[in-house]
Image (cartoon, rainbow, N blue to C red; front, side, top):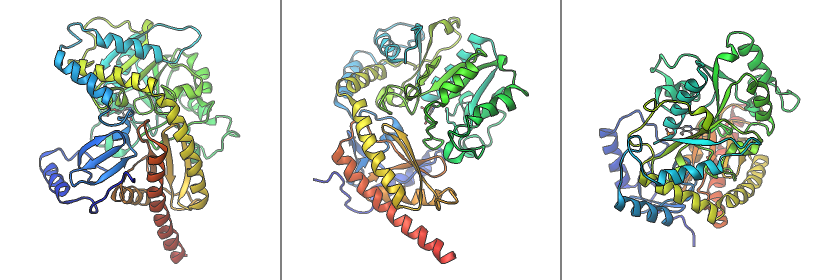
Length: 455
Ligand SMILES: Cc1ncc(COP(=O)(O)O)c(C=O)c1O
């Protein structure tokens, strides 16, 4: 039986009314993909207020790794809700955040030195990165920070200063944090240096040395290099396998810390606990949030214990490490381990990648396919030769997919982001891909015929 059920093309009457109310009472700073109004959800199926059922291919923006209303999470959170809901871990003690910290430390990628780690809790990705900024500066006594163009690290002023993915996210908010430098991300499909991997010999790393560290950014003043191992909001961009090895080798010698933002790519999403594990390097700290709480807000910074030199009172958060969210976090980790969800992510991801590569051969508007596990980007272009961003085309595809029962969103300028829960089954993948392919085929036909008319 198909999982998708569309009674009438969304948005239905109830959804329209709620959207109207939302626009009246909520801040207009939020940009939404399409007017989907949720009523309830379970695992990979979402039902809207008008009774339409959809396959979830975005996991509430990479949060619902173990699916919606996962039974184990609901049970763990409910039990904790009845015990106590809050008692500020920054002022008092309770046990389940220690247990969660032990788990996070245990899954942190290991290096030969097996350095001890410690955990700081906040409530979100931006707070985890904010903690990373403060800790890196505090521990190294160095003022400067490096980050990538195309990156997204959050929206508080510190994290936003590292962010460089969309103008709307930063416009009007300057001055931002001083001492932050952005360098080109290894976005090989659109190489900023117009070179080709591997012939380029990582010229983009030479570029950082020559144009920053040799010119105006003394490397010994740099506290940390912030990186997303796979760029998320920037367009699901995957660097070459040995890129980070080269980067860490070259710049680790300056005593620069590597702060790995796994807010979107972490917690099993790519088939490993952390996406950085695909690249054979070990960072000094990792920021996690999103999927960690299975839908409840929690963020964490896991860092080398020898860096955690900051004094009592130097950093804290009233709601950080909320015990209900921590109970959910423990349930998320058990669920991923016991149900072998990372293996499923790898299997379903490889299956989809094979199909997407076939689509790339078939459709003129598919420029690039990239991803690991269930973090896959399909870059839409106007045509393969010009590689011009197909932003309107990508929006059309996501809107069509939604109206036909698949919750698909985009990222970057024109990339479809395929990020279903790690629990997704082959049947649901096949049903969703049929909808997405039909939308791609229609938009492809329209785009090609428009171009032919112009020529
Ligand atoms: C890589 C990355 N870092 C940080 C953030 C910010 O997380 P939050 O929205 O929980 O503050 C996001 C959110 O999309 C993200 O993708």
